[in-house]
Image (cartoon, rainbow, N blue to C red):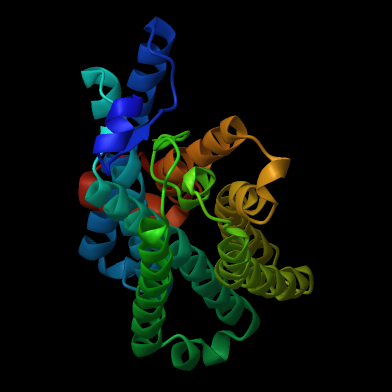
Length: 312
């Protein structure tokens, strides 16, 4: 390995599973999750595009969430599966940069998109008369484009910096994808300034949106509590609890991994938590939004002819 390190600028991904039968079984389970995620999110995008009743800001935002989840899981899982089955662990310098860029773009953009979805629910429930103005089609488009652009700019800055760090130690990354914090221990320079910038960036793209989401749903829950209609309270609470479930699955692992000093958590913990936000959450999002949403279930019945009438 030392000879490889000295003659190549590429990296080695140590992976997630051991090279044995247990690892192979777990890998096939991940492949199954990848298949479910791809089919589920693609079906959600297709359903929202087909059904006119779902042509509302909330579902346009949801379709973007599904698109991000497809890119999210496609950034990490195929390479991990290929390396495991081929017995190789290498990833090219350019491939590592591309993987890091798309992963960080999806991470940042999805955090902003989730805050937009929280704002959408806040306006719909707390200011229903102002909803057509505050959440117009143009405003929805601006939120979506803004999420993608800001996420891409932030991701590009981190990726360029990470690829310009001089790596004079082993190039073996103790992770299953090119995650920038996992690459920093390989640098032969002091990276404390950059680690501080990672903390600032994480606060801007994760912590602040999370505070906005918390504030939005705080007002929503307050409004729900004062609703006179029992049916209205139930519908609003179901919608908001769905969104909060997604937010919890998304933010909790990120906050633990990126807002804590590196010496307070091990690479193994980072890899396990990364499974949640790179693999499990993209799979759960369409399931949560479809099985707990009567409008989506109704659209599935109309467009795909599934689910009986008594489930609506």
